[in-house]
Image (cartoon, rainbow, N blue to C red; front, side):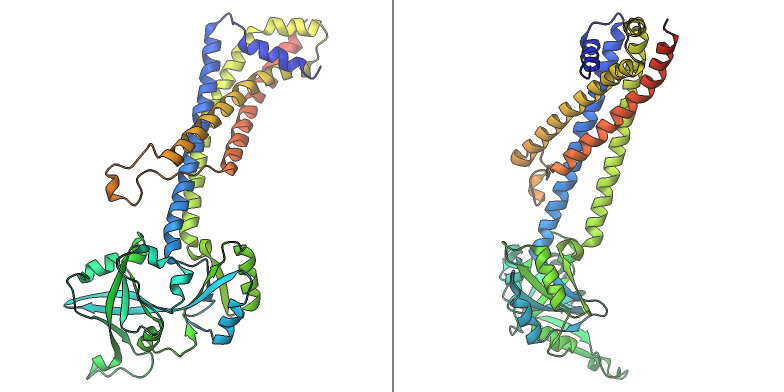
Length: 412
């Protein structure tokens, strides 16, 4: 008896109706569910692709893990603490970083910038060498005369490595002592550096603000002690579990610092992407809900047409719940059929774009990538399937329960 309602519903769905409009509405219902499902899969995959792409850009400049102070700008990181971190299983390299604001002058042009001092391990904990497009990244602990600039910052200062020979001048106010109003220039630390490389993260916050110098030069410029750093950057071995390494580092670190992974280093950006993805999901889900109203219309018309069949089923001993399940299965077949076909269409289109990049940007030579980035994730497929199926079930439940109950009760 469990399969009887399904068999009857299957026959009702594909049998010829006396009113052809019922078939048309049923097809429209399935198409609406199908298109909405495919669109939902595609839009969610586009957000995944953008999220992964922008995250990869950050990954060229930022480390896997970053140890930063809970309060203030700096913390003490002596050689014993750094050596302890390097001995943790899964840690490939550790690099000390000191960053603060300074004024840069090149010729007659001046620009404020975030000057970041790095040691010789920085190129190991990040992929900075991969984003140097002009010159070389020849910056380290004791290379006090070398500097690498963000592309936008270098352009604003008018620096061209092929034709420029002037030194870059860095100014920073002294952290201690009083300002001499008669000779204010004595209240600043002044240093010079040769620009050896220009990098492009393709993110304006980096390319327009950052200048990388040697760690010792940064400490001299900002008047910090030998052990003071702004952060310790950690590269995790590819075979290691980043979350486990993060927990081990946190356990070995004092309470005055915290350990951030790549997501936490750009928490506001990734949260914004998640909110945008959620809003897109809700909007498309609402469109699917509207499309599901066609199921209500087609089921109502079908039940009206089959009211004689309801009387016959009751006279043959069919219970009210069995008749109800017949028409519930009818609505569910429409919605589930639409969602399955939509999932297949959406997944195929996303995979084709992911591997072949059929949809490209106009004037692609001006962009970092040629085609729209997408990433199909099974969690999105599952979420879409469950959402649309629930919408279809609810859309079929109300008309079936109310209309079938009325006809069944009035059958003689």
